[in-house]
Every structure is written in structure tokens, then in C-alpha cells.
Image: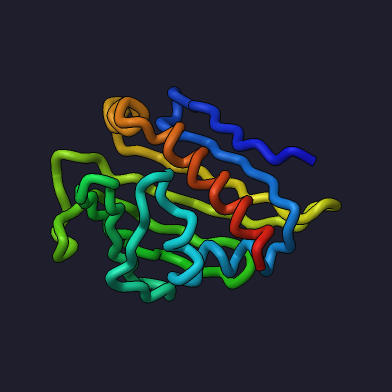
Length: 163
């Protein structure tokens, strides 16, 4: 089965809906999303690399990372975990920030809800990303989110075949 990322825009509700199926168990996919060593191997679209500075995957925890570009660029992001429901899903808010985790107010906050489900052939991850304003959704789309996240999920597919 060919796994493809589906991204739909729900402009009326200021949301992006992302669905991706994997030929791997929920447990394996969950680990790849929540273990910083594995997460760093797939999160960034190639040739970029994700590098975690802090990872506290708990309710109220923090993930501070940056994406390192091929020419030495660094793009920092902070993820503030809200809820974690082991093996089922988690929620968080994400912001671009500086290397110390101070939020860059010139970029919108993204509110993520993730659900992990078993399927007959493996698992499915449903992601809903909501925004405070229409312009916020448009800005994230304009900077290439859809292509970048699709590439990252493709990297995850490759990684899942390795362990």
C-alpha cells in the first residue's frame, strides 16, 4: 500500500486537517513521534535536519528544537505540550522562537491535536492544526508548511521501515 499525506484546508474554521497512514503499528509510530532521537531523524524536510535541545514529553512539558539548513541556517521552534494520552494522542501549541525559546510574535501560534489509530494495515495519524486568525493559516501555508510537513511524514515512513 502506498501511504500518502492528505492535507485539507478548512478555511471557515481556520484549520488544516492532515491524515497519514503507515504500514507500522501505533506503538512504533507513537515512539517515532515522541522519542527525541527518532523524531530528530524525520521531522525536518530534507536536506534540513531537526535537532532537539529540550524534550519533556509530558502534560505541560516542552520540546525546543531547531531545523538546521544545509547552509548553516537555524530555524527554532518551541512546542508546549498541553495533554498527552499515551498511545492515543496529544495536543500542543507550536511557535517559532529564538534559541532560548522566546516566542517570535511575528509568526502565528499553531494549535495541534494528534490522534493515533490502528488500522487493518498498520496505523493512521490524524492531525488538526488550528489557527487564531485566517491570516495566520494563510501565512503558514505561504511559507511552505504543506510541502515541508508532507516531506517530513515521508521521512517518517522511511524511518519506520528501518526499525
